Length: 179
Image (cartoon, rainbow, N blue to C red):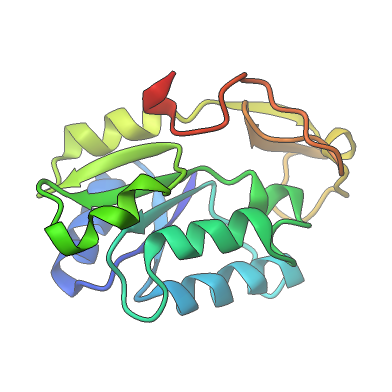
């Protein structure tokens, strides 16, 4: 499993990298929303071979905040047009207490999980456990087998969509905490 950590705080990103290493997960770090989108775009173009299986996205980022980045990934080309990218689970990295001037960001932030800071390894492991994957033939999700796939099979989240039309395997499209 590979993760993309989008965190602007150097200390926090280092903590997340160490926690993920202990859990056996490799990771890359983007320092803001723009870098995260550039990284994902390079994955789509095939310039980066290690696509993230999960995105750990801080809510309060410079330039583009977390909810804006999540919205772009889910709705804007080329991200929304790529089934593997648009189906990548997003886990929000939030503060224990939401600052009054930032409460509006949390309301519209559709995410697949949440980890609160200060972070604990058990919380990260719990959030990653709720992200369920299944292994399917690459052609089922409209993809060709690419480098790194196992014998033409790819992993996709159970709530991902198939092909061009949306086919959700869970009835609720919002945060998993509301299920």
